[in-house]
Length: 506
Ligand code: BG6
View (cartoon, rainbow, N blue to C red):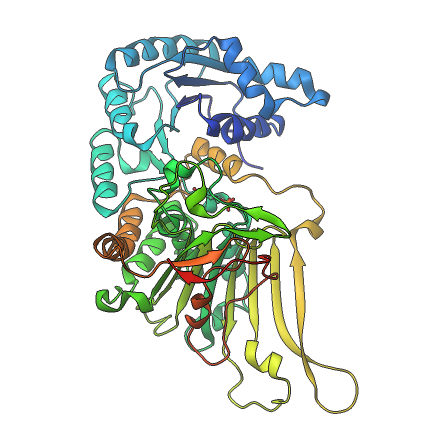
């Protein structure tokens, strides 16, 4: 049983935004219900909007109210305060500091603070600077100070690097918690346990036995109301540079020397440093980008990306991206890794598929289906979280007919309740001072450095292929030819749902 975190105050910047009532407050409330919050604590929301404490509480109530536990909700909200603050104006931070010392006295939190930056990224730097100028960043015997930074962390290599450098003027690396909610997912953490607590997988986990690795994060939703953000981001920045490369690092890393946060993140960094640079003259062979177009999904009209609100009607932003890359080290040699992600695909599924090599001599060639797929270990991140091992079995009866069968583990069969939301785990870890599941600055830089040639190429060659795919399909059809090897394809966990629409180059 984990010890409770020290008493503390959590200050949320940008608290009038959606993330606070959708994710942060519900996660903190859940921890509170499970008695995982500190003995005493305060949560202070700050934002530019003028709100009374009562207004703020009523905004949050959706995420925390539950008719069965009204008293608990009220008790929790007694710890929640609001203070109007313009993040760009230093004076407000002096006021914040004096309010915080009153609350620190009341909640016996000494000088322990988490500052959660849930604002637009353009003000991350100034918040860190103003906190420091107001004397709220230095750690002394008055307690610890930690700062959680939401994504996006930079929009390219140089902006991420300068943000890192700027933050490091005011906070040291051990105080910085760069959030990547994928790392908070149980099933992503389970990659470490699957690999390093079982004797059976690790001996096979290398170029001698693995043919290729596939990582998919498919979403059935489109850009919804986030067009103005997404149109300047695109799938590569939004999903691959951060979440999916972090997942790839957990699949590919060497065993860490211990479960210490520094040791694990050293291994992540080594993977990123070993990523083979893309050949800039042949990028189209390594990267595919696509954009969803209008279609009907189960008879219902689905908009194309360019018709979404706040999206440029001539946008060339990718809503689908697939990359192929190699990790130049002894373990992986020439094993290709494929990552694909997209919006408006037929279903929501995130999974890692380890495709093992076939047997050196094929005795049972008559079964093409099995021969083509070989053994696969499917690690389902979401939904229907679990692990599936696919292998060949003899079909009862005459001859030696081989059939692909599944050995299937589902988290829900454990029967001990819900999987915690990523934010619960990540917030609790930060309170405990454990940064294992947060991205370290050097790794963020290295991941941006890896994708930067693609961003440059698309920027400098707007005419580079952008493939339209009907909303509800599995992305551009050209992505099928992308995977090397005879008869090898992506895993399609469900059927194409687009009734119509055309695959075309936009
Ligand atoms: C976010 C992206 O980081 O992750 C979104 O900005 C995306 O565009 C989301 O939808 C996906 O997260 P999850 O947990 O639903 O897979």
